[in-house]
Length: 391
Image (cartoon, rainbow, N blue to C red; front, side):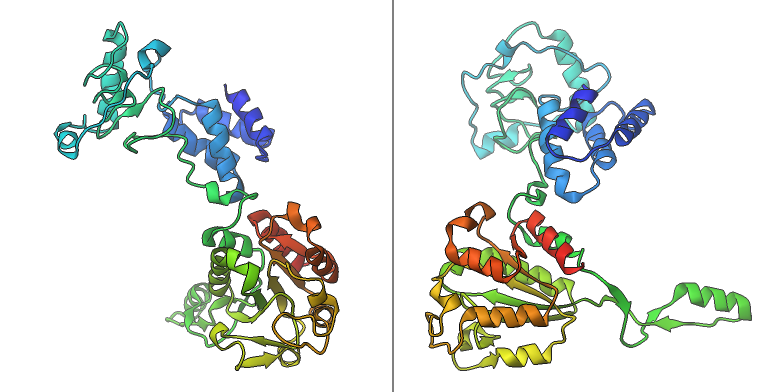
């Protein structure tokens, strides 16, 4: 079974090695999992998963291999006939009736009682409060109700009362192929870090304090500046039009970026970059910032991130006056080229799935202007973008 689990993880794309598998086997030989599936789950996850992005893949593989084994405990080993768990009806109770059903009192009591039931039960049971079966109030079985129990043979959750279920998949938002949430974005942004101690010395330097105190024979306090991320980031967010479909994802990205970088500046644009940008969307027409001013204010060591779907008429990129909002004296591609020349570290994040890019002419044009440095707004795409920026 463990070898099958190892191969299932490999097939799921989790980069496990033979060394890690042997480490898990050593831990099992030392009985670190105590013959319980919940303990084995956490032990295997800690041993075999090196990257948070693979946690969801691990959960899915674990569920496939160990499906139905909610708990493993000494003495609780039995083949339960499928007929016992055949779904004929389900148990639906009022809230008052649910309150009258008592829990057994914890995991140990559940396991002890399950052992007794397995020894005593000789046939299928339905609708009762004691035996392993369906549609009842017993703690063991499927399609019934109990304040706490061990789910056996049931397809998916119903009351969310089982002590442990392996299809919960708490880390599904960390899969590298899915769109991002704020927590996932912060994980990916960690690649774009270069720490330095700047500012006022307001943090205790413990190591130096101890060393000099021991050397001098009296307390000698030393302070130092706080350690901060020294990377400077300049972001341009496309707003309005087709980007309205991606507002939630863009907001999550903006929230994560603001918390990760001390040196952060942001501006908004629509569809393509032109001669002006703005800081407040409600004042986008009467309070703008010349793009030339941005290029001359922020040095070339800033990391530049564009966020937009790049979905527009090709005329907005290649023609003067092509903008849908104003008469732009210069084509958008001219401004894009100026930005990429000024800032060598520059990427474009696109919320449109990468599989659809080739069907939109403007996306292909923007990608070409970016020198191919366009990435999908997924965890994997953001990770690649951050690698590009730190090159």
